[in-house]
Length: 305
Image 1 (cartoon, rainbow, N blue to C red):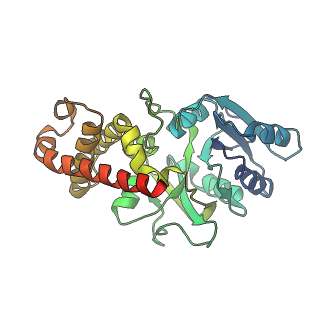
Image 2: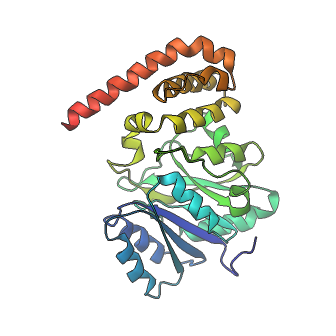
Image 3: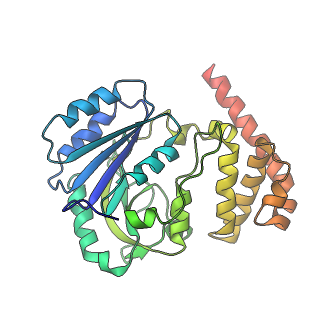
């Protein structure tokens, strides 16, 4: 892979009708003292004025290159697929179109990477903070933690979204996110889980991104996503069952897999499971969880009426 001379980092931003928020993302990039990055916007079929905004920014002298790719709407994971195919820098990280880089974030990332790049890491894991309160999302890192996998961090009691900065060659060494017909959601952690099996991440115990969760974002529509994207969820749960973080987590993932398979009307889910015996015995619990999902969705729909 050929890297862009002197530029180490691509910051990519999937965008879908976020013209009302992506401006603050842009401003946070302009305010960075270190401009050692490319900004790649992958427009996932926006119907607002996102394209016009970006084209205006591209005409300015920002101190960094802006690249823009438009694609038909397919969901966040498909935008990531397109981004990874078009990144040619050593490192990359995703900053959502409603988030902002924290002060001097690029400098912190580049400095950290130059310190650890010879140690075989897949990249860096850093902190996110709440844009409105300034507090770290979830838990921070233990002071003595210098390296971890993403799965290992959560298995040891960690919580909350974290900012991931990956080597581009490593993120592209694992398969792309699969795309299922008429489904527009798949867990981004799929790639990260596969990478965890071979590589660790260097810990940067500093905030590099300020986040704000939108009411129409994935975290607020998960029960609807369960019903709309059951094949994608079942696929993800199979991956989790293949690489379990703990016995407890294996049971949870198996129950979810059963529920997702019921929603997808997949009669062969036991045969296709990586843990067939466990799936058989947990099928009743999976059915109960399916009913719970339906009840939660009904409640959400009633509130929305």
